[in-house]
Amino acid sequence: MTGNKRESWGSRFAFIMAAAGFAIGLGNMWRFPYLVGTQGGGAFVLVYLVICLLIGIPLFTMEITLGRKAQSNPVTGMRKIAGKGTPWVSFGWFGVIAAFFILTYYIQIMGWLAAYIVKMLTGELSGLAAGGYETAFNAFTANTMQLALFTIICTVIVGFISAKGIENGIEKVCNVLMPTLFVMLIILLIRSVTLPGAMEGVKWYMNVDFSKINGQTFLNALGQAFFSIGIASGGGFIYGSYLNKDTNVPGDAIMVVAADTGAALLTGFVMFPAIFALGLEPGQGSQLLFVTMSNLFNILPGGKFFGTLFFLLVFFAALLSAIGYFEPIVSTVSELGKMSRKKAVWISLAVIFVVGFPTIMAHGPWADKSIFGMNFFDFADFLSGNILMPLGAIALSLYTAFKWKFVNFKEEANVSAGAYRVMNWWKPFVMFIIPIALIIIFIKGVFF
Image (cartoon, rainbow, N blue to C red; front, top):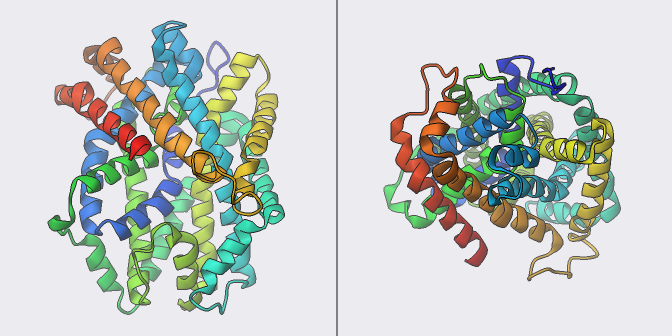
């Protein structure tokens, strides 16, 4: 605890595990593999790595540094730094509201994963014909009561951990689950690459065909890096706010982004060698996780065990991200509402569940109801991912470039920095390239 009774991380390791846990989620385990599968394999991977290095790390460093400087939730923190009533406070509000709408459907997807763990354990998915996996998934998501039950269970898990606070809840869970997650990834990777014919998948995954790289590849890779690292959704800011001044922010930021990127790359090595070895199609799009992988584990030797392990792995990743998305909401509600953390946790989760219930109904009874041509689930995803997060990131980048100024950002970030520091060559990226890239993402995401 600090003098103002604000919690802080117990160690540098704890912060890195928690921040990496926030970053590593469905963006790595679900979205990255299906984008690789549909965007040309290794060509997309190469572009993604370059963007993470040149844009992802600077943006994440900005957000953590601002959080450490503020020592508060995103809204109160930006009021403290930029002045109450200034447009820059919008960055805090965009992040908190984006995190709220992300959780209205994100916890539901955790429910899908929890259900698939049960289905794998009980053998419910065994012996289906190839087309049966899509039918089974659609039938499950259309069962409103069953889906709501699994969503409630996951909501309670998130609440129980969050109510314990930073040191006794989030820190302890992340310190255990993050290393466990990577151990599970490596076990699954070894099993995948040792299958007969798996090397064809490895070659496809690592082969860079430059002819497949175009403007769309860059935009998709930029959007994926943005989504995966979780920039401008409040998580980086709030986790940074629990840091002390002696923290090496640039070094920690690169370690978190490296862990996030490493998890995505390892997931590709889990999926694609096995997919090629068993003669499945890598370009299945968004169905890759629940349909293609379920089919894969049905025909994979020892598939029941490895399938359960796989969905448990993805569930852990989603849980750690959900905790990270939830923290800025809890902190903001607690501080602005002047209430205890536990009360803020359960009130916030109750509202999230009620507001998110239409996203559950969107797969069944309300499938024909729409907002701007989208069902409730897709609209919550669109609102958070295509509007609120990009607007928040634009506000963050413009604030850094024109209000905070690069020289002040550099000085603040480099307090206690080690060998890896914010360097002068960052300036054109911070001042021009990143804001322009974010504005392009926003325009594309909303209007095209």
